[in-house]
Image (cartoon, rainbow, N blue to C red; front, side):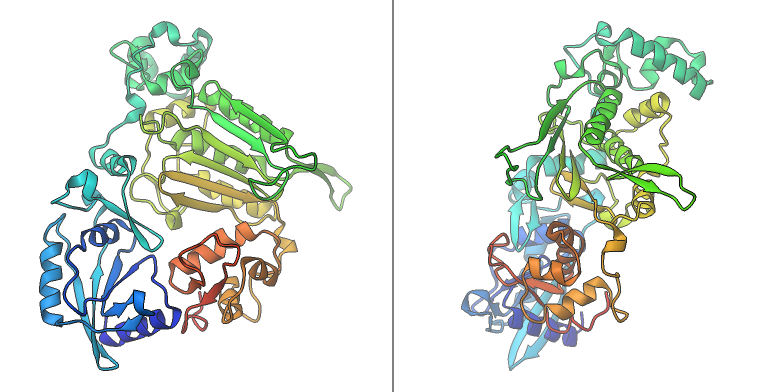
Length: 489
């Protein structure tokens, strides 16, 4: 960055008195901090990287202390960066502010094939960190494994199920599978049945694989009890809310079976617990419309079953579905796989975590393995005049949320040419609560506003929490970062 940009950034931080997801403050008035390895690791592993600012005392009301020696500090920070694997190359900027010398070190995100970046002195397991809010947190074993899976092309769906044998397959499902495969893949159908199962990743050395058991097993949960779907209905908008009769759940079911059985039973659960309305067209034709477009719901459930993580790290984690009064949430174990980010969903082809399961369902259900699921979900919600879906990727969990609020009942996305995000920035010149912001936008779902607007604005450094150390405080409010209110989002 330029010295002028560093000056503006420092002024914003001092005014807001808060660190950021991508900014770490260090005093450095008496010398170079001895252990920057955690931050160097977390910023290198974080999307977009981060910035270390030297010369601000966070514990002393964010006072500008300046650094002891800008040249020596850069040398010693570089020496620490050389202890990382892969080596980190900070980009330094020096600026004089109020007669104090401040230094910034920009840390670029490393390539996914080099992640996780870690401190060599601690090793890959203990030296890998990830940024969570304003803190550097040790990576879990699973988070580290997730990078290894992509780099080394580990296919957990092809793990052999030691307790299973050929008798573990459902003979009727096997017969249906071969019939469908011969129609869909005539060239492959020329092979023997045993070779087809081998080539399609359903058996390995005559032993069923995870993919084989989940697609064609008589009872997959005999081997993997938690590879299932848990579905529940909450009579409210928050998980802790109780129903009118004091009940915690209106409906609650664990859904088991093969992938196709779980798909159909999950859809049946959602149909049973969602409302339908009757629409009369101009010509007098009556039609029932579901609370959520079932084509979109089916794609979400199907995507969760296909793309969830089937490694030993998530064997104990089912897919989780919750129907609230205002929304439907679907969470599946395993965050986004490979290089794709949430912003790229539906716009670019994604890496496939479980290609053999995807191919198997393509044969059995005639599903499209063409990366069309996300665009279909978005388009179906738009056709139903409902709020757009919200996609979230958080530390080993991917979540999709559908809201039942009609777009036409929401105040226009623009007001005097300003987007909803710009409205929030203008409104939050004074600290505002989440409820106040929700009402200001003409909405009735604070959770939607948080996921769709507040969280992205915070991550972009345009909005700040008034109580950053207690994000869930009931007294929490949001305030615009200076100079952000005039920036069109």
